[in-house]
Length: 118
Image 1: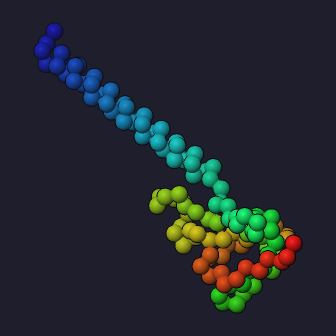
Image 2: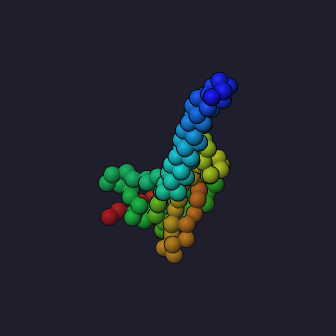
Image 3: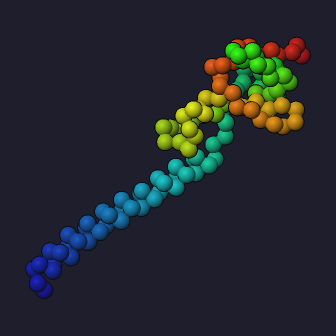
């Protein structure tokens, strides 16, 4: 056998194995990233004994606008910097009213949360 072909087949096989390993690991991590993005739910907001996602309340914003008779469902949260969620929509409260209409409001704009006595 030609020494050039023997050397090429020896090193070519090693390079091909390394390339296949890199391709397979890239595909594995892409699939894992996609699964984590599609299966995440909003971050739950609960203060034990005070507010849960079943508690009806009234929320007043800094601008004076009020959301009456709503539930705090959770908060938007991106897991990392490479999320599908725009940066402007990160860390927003998700509210739901009695007609199951949902609202996103900035958490930093909340002035007060009024919870009726049980």
